[in-house]
Image (tube, rainbow, N blue to C red; front, side, top):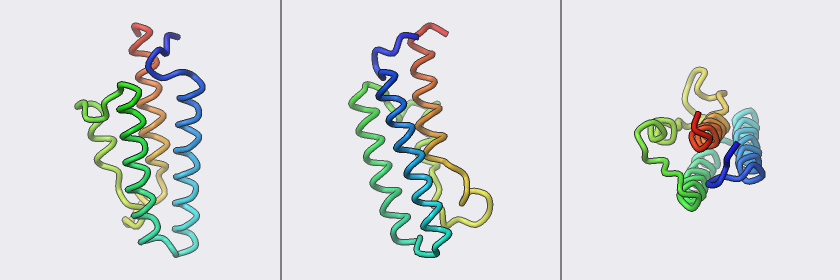
Length: 105
């Protein structure tokens, strides 16, 4: 697998950070502390992942990625959206797609 933009270690680290963010946000929701802290974490994560992907040459504003990135909903939303690991999904799917697009798959 050719991973010239995102190395294997860098991709795994980004996915681990996304899992940690989702776990933290879920913990805050369970503890009912969530609304303000969740919003702050969401903004920081969006800026951090946006800058990181941009630095790696992977633009989250491309049509196939922008919906996943911009549709990130707050954990405070009612229903199933509050428990979905959306940062993990966004980061893992973007890294996975980038790895496989560079390999010519």
